[in-house]
Amino acid sequence: QILYNFTQQQSGTSGQDGVVIDHGGNLYGAFPNGGDHGAGFVFRLKHSANWVLNPLFSFSGGSSGGQPTGLIVGPDGSLYGAAQGGIQNCGTDGSQYCGLVFNLAPPPTFCRTALCSWNESVPYRFSSDLDGSGVIKITAFDSRGNLYGTTSTGGALGGGTVFELLPSGDGWIKTTLFSFDPRNVDSGPAKVLVGTDGNLYGISNGLENG
Image 1: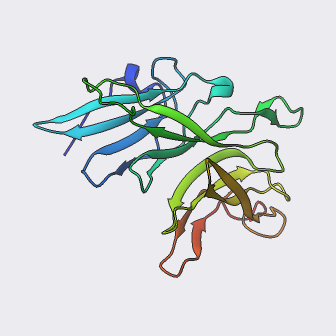
Image 2 (image 1 turned 120 degrees about the horizontal axis):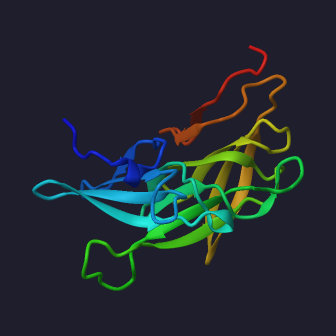
């Protein structure tokens, strides 16, 4: 059953990482292109008589963020994800954006229309290749509200990282839990989930040399 057909103008020229669902049955997703500025957007599909599309936030690109990569629903019902942008200090010449983690929440006051934009905040901006770079994905919360994700490259050994973000006061504290070494272990992690035993489980791109 097809719930909603996106137009090319809505979705840009590339696909997205699937959808997530909240407790109310609403679906959320992100396109890396399209939107008001062409740098990607986040949408909600809300079911009434039919599924209705509500664009929630359009990225403007550059340091403000763009090309979002997936979403998860946080414990408070707001959305978390990652995007390109942030600090320009990565790559061989330091000219590339290192990436950021974003949070989208509804306006604090009641919105009279379905088209009101959600508000963006940035819990964390990656600062260097050592910190983590490449394609960044936010994929899991644990029962204590800690956030987990991956970077496809960077880290201490260059093969990507698994990281944790802990809420602390008005901010978040980032810890690199593991740095992949492309010379002797799998590299390029793509996703992690929290198991019932509290450990993290994930997938990677495999050994570079087979």
